[in-house]
Amino acid sequence: MINVLLADDHSIVRAGLCRIVEESGDMAVVAEASDGKEAIRLVREHRPDVAVIDISMPEIGGLEVIHRLRPEFPDLPILVLTMHEEQQYAVRVIEAGAMGYITKKSAPEQLVTAIRKVHGGLRFLTEEAAEYLALHVAKGQAGKSPLDLLSARELQVLRRLALGYTNREIAQAYNISIKTVDTYRLRLLKKLELRNNAELSRFAIQNRLIEP
Image (cartoon, rainbow, N blue to C red; front, side):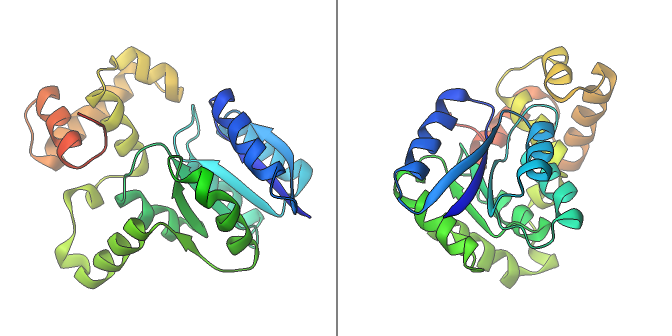
């Protein structure tokens, strides 16, 4: 049996993923986490064969979870899940040390295959993510997208700003100060050469960070 840890902050999503895994016949969910901190604690406690981690979770997101787990568990296959088809994240999660990347939309059809593949030491990417990754490598540094200039936290703040969250709500979601959120906002405007939140929202839609 392949022992799997599932980490997602939405209980309904976790329940659906759990059902998919348990019905596979050769896998068992040994732990479920609702946020990044809990995911790290449960990996240490249960030592799963594969960790399936949502990229967007409160306090500690999926990328940070990977960064924290990788030194301690270098051989743990990590499969990243995302709600949105944000292909630029594929580069970040692979560079961070994940073995696979799929969208929640594709999970019903691909999750079991993806888990088996990363458990076997192979990578698993959606076709779109693989194409984006290949294009990123081909372009090299000179062809970087503006999104490649942003840190994982900046991308998270950008998405929430574009979705209309207030600075206070973003600060609470990531356990940071309101002043820090505003610093991220100003940094985003400067890096992306934009003027206000409306332009940030438009940029996020154009780059498929959020749905229009």
